[in-house]
Length: 348
Image 1 (cartoon, rainbow, N blue to C red):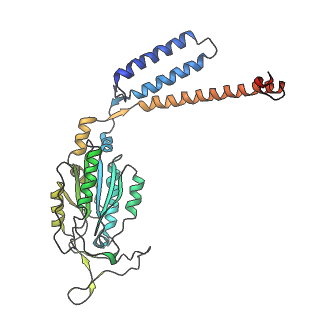
Image 2: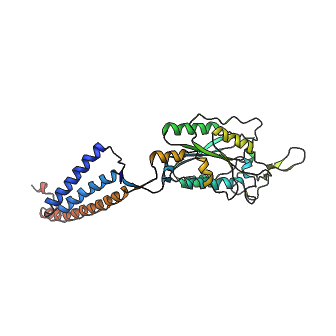
Image 3: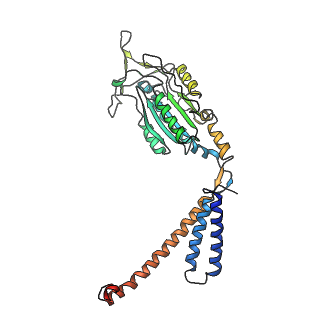
């Protein structure tokens, strides 16, 4: 049995001893007097609260709870090429992105997640939060840039926004490792070379660059901005004279370059690939170090038993107070009636 108190020992220890002495004295001296049970309940309530504050526990359980100490950033490519139909059975690449984001979140319970998208510009779609329902909603509505607004994009368009968000996370909670998952196809459609995705040392503790697409490529449907684009035409390529359906091909060399800049591994993603094996490499030791430093082998907490007991005792005490109030109210009515409905002080 180990204790991890939420308050300093010098404060909790004398308070706990005093509560124990007080409870023993109540039971020994006042159990035969009216009101004794109520006083015992109040002493027990204090004792249970103090016991919960000591956070008793035993070694064991899963150390996966250390994931709660992680800040996880998803940098998602939302250019038109991300709807190229070469993921699985001719599905858009964004389908794989959505599946992988939620699968990663499922493997890191309690972590804080943020979503940054980039096409012509980068945007923070969701700041850091533990709300996986919000993450699921944001992920479900990920859509590529409206085709009419596309003017060429860079694979490192999220560089400044990502650096800003990572720096803010480090400044507010430096003890939490920061993982970055870059999800894209590496296709550079801007007319110039991408800016290097170089970040300050120590900002990224782990993560991965996840690549989507095939060497054969796939056609892309236009995003017209309407609610339903099921019947939207395919994007056309007008270069070289004759117009034809444009085809997007993954550029793994550029994705590997992004991974090298971030200091994380590159992993190509295909339909049905599990994320668990990828995460073991992607964490880059960040989660494992947290487990070793803070909670070796995991820990089973028992504070909730005392907290629940305090709730039950407090509820019983509340019921007793309500009963006393009900007994007092009828006694006041005859007094008013005896003085013509006026308060006692007014009758005098």
